[in-house]
Length: 224
Image 1: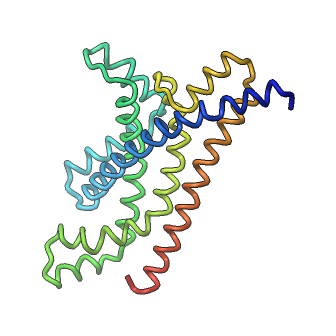
Image 2: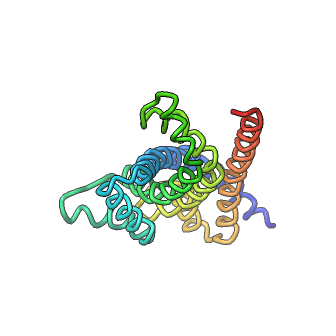
């Protein structure tokens, strides 16, 4: 590696990492938090088998799982202004990522809810709990433990998917890298560098996932 290229990589590293810490990570945290709220609500509505709510949830999941994330970003950021609705790039990205991820996570949570033995719900009723109390104290905690690995994988995938936000002018890591590439004409080295930073973020999350799974296993082993 020549000195010029090494200098470019060393100089670009903080310029790529800082947008990752200031934009990519906050975007992921905000969007995934909203996605989880949407997912739990949609899964519970389907689990309760309320006809109208179930159909609405199925329609929402069908649309957002069946269309590309990039198309959804373009519809919200570039399309909605045509009907008088303008959303700034970062909020638009949060909105789209949360709706898209919420659709996938809703199916994960729904499957986890259905995996809880039916007798658990009856046990809650026998203990004098209402439906909502039984769901909150008995069913949902068990379901979330089952869903934890899959939800963690979805979070890791979202970190990488945030690179698509560069297409609607969100200044995250990939946007910063493209700007540096345009100035230096070193695409191979710089795109490998940003890929390694994404890999670093994903590795940290994978490690945290492992820690969480071990703690959940220990908790279950203690009869929690």
